[in-house]
Amino acid sequence: MNLGTKMKFIPVNNSIEKAIAFANSLDQNYLKNTQKINQKEFYIPTLDVVNKLRNEGWQLNGVDEQRGKSRKTINNFVQMIHPDFAIKNNKGKDEAWTSLTITNSCNGAKPLEMNIGMFRQICSNGLIRFDKQAEKEKIKHIEVNANNLDKFITSVTNKTDLILNDVLQMKRKGLTYEEIKEFGIEAAKLKYANLDDINIDDLFAVNRVEDEGNDLWTVYNRIQENLTQDVTNIKADINLNKQLYRLANQYSLAV
Image 1 (tube, rainbow, N blue to C red):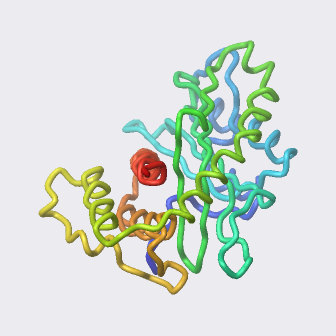
Image 2: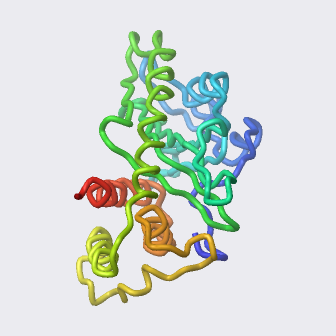
């Protein structure tokens, strides 16, 4: 996010070995033999999904995991990007790529979830994830789903056009000063119970030349970056970004 801000995901450069090194819970042997975690009978390992997505051209971009009070890992998180599904800037260069954020519980108590969104990296800029019900897959750890993973992979990949169209709509939507201010206030409410805790103008700070402009996509990126830069909990970060996307989408669809 801002210069010097830590990434929410640990970059792994499309390497399975690096992913497991930084998120041990991706290794089934580690979960079963070291952490002694009892999994559902038809548990779907995160790496099974990752490998199927890689066969479809998705690249492994970053990982993280969450531990509980017992120090056992509760959830693991993977972010993937697809270089073929990109948004270009006004110079014709790739600016953002379609992304998938995978969340999986280590024991299978909760469904594996895939959220489709965008990843934007300019200098040290970090992650943009947004979600609508139509761009999400929840996969329960049951036999029929374990046997039909390809169906879910195809389904989520086929939805990439939806998110690309959303971004293009945002890029075409110009905002007035009053609309930008209103957007910033509504965005701040998603994080702060008391708006006295934040200077709204700080949300519009431009950190690089690429972030100058008053179209909805550019304003959304500035607000997203400045609002989430100090959110270190991965689940809280994902949830805040989902809400920010829904808010931006409302402005995009407004006449």
